[in-house]
Image 1 (cartoon, rainbow, N blue to C red):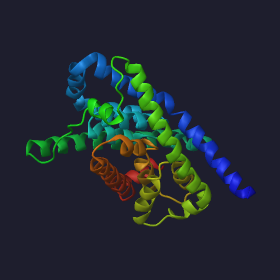
Image 2: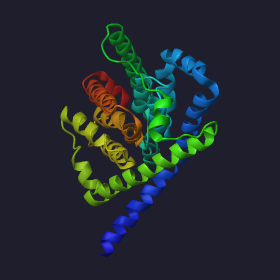
Image 3: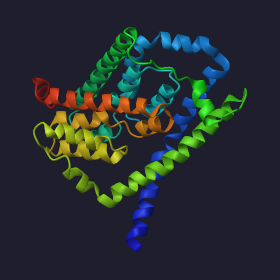
Image 4: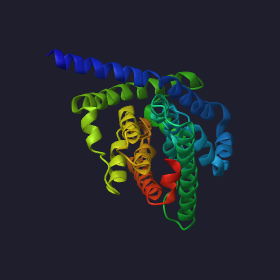
Length: 298
């Protein structure tokens, strides 16, 4: 009984810590979206969408900061179709989550850290531009329905009839998603506490080629424990640099959970996740099977 209570309390503490730090990002994101809806009108949306060709670059730069809040914010903006699929992918791929603190605390070479961050940024930006380019090409040939959802659609689904009180609508959105994150993160933390991080690490033992696939699967766990485990295994020499990056590329924190919670249709969220997973595995393999791996990890 004591062990069960300890497990629950430990998971609950991690849940509160992980969720509370996201609330400012959530509120500012929804406040921004409400300002677009209630104050700026269609002109600002057209301006943002018109500048979408630089979106992946901006998304990659913002995502590289060691803070999962940007992936949550990007998920919210994509749900309202303020940013493109490529910009969202760029943020997800470049997001560092716990990699940077673990590398610094482990005494990693500053040049190694810069090369890893630069690689995540480069892959995120290039992949983001490619995704947007392919999407535009498909639309020109009548393939794919485009991104028709709007901020109004999100408000209608959430029943946030707040008139001009955009700040109240933003608070309602934030409260709803915070409750969801508390429940979701608690379940994930409980699972990790029950299974044990050591057992999770066993899933990503160094194996040629398969290690990138296994790392990416572990990286999809929307919790900082997966990025900590992957980075620690690399520091211990168990994982190659490419395999570690495969897991970290796809590790966008709870941003993906927020995407599936809010974005419609659900198949579009699944499409984004599949694109992200494919790019993560491909990039990790490319790094390990070329001189890039030796250069990055040197």
